Amino acid sequence: MFKANRYDMVLMDMEMPVRDGYSATCEIRKWEVETGRKEVPIIALTAHAMKEYVQKSMDAGCSGHVNKPIKKQPLLDLAREYAGNPKNGKLKGSAQSI
Image 1 (cartoon, one colour):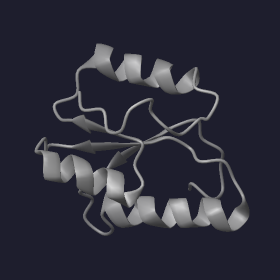
Image 2 (cartoon, rainbow, N blue to C red; image 1 turned 30 degrees about the horizontal axis):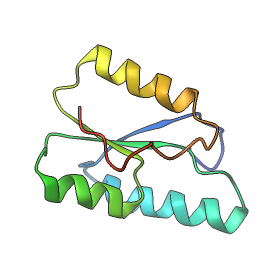
Image 3 (cartoon, rainbow, N blue to C red; image 1 turned 120 degrees about the vertical axis):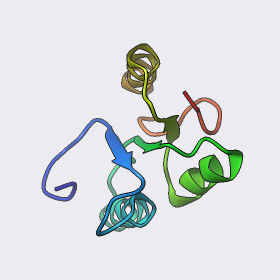
């Protein structure tokens, strides 16, 4: 779906049954480089809040990391931050955990 459509942001479930979000994110980042496309923000959605999981998400190419259960307002704030970011893909800091 990502290759066939244009998205402003991707909310990536990191623990999917067939392909995990880490490998899917790596594939998206590789495809963006190969095709010369601008990085789309990819936000990791996971129940894992420990630092090593946040780092694993960032190492896979995610732009941010959101812990489940997801709260509406922090997610909307994160979406606003990306919508107003001219680089469209990088947080001001490194990982953001909500």
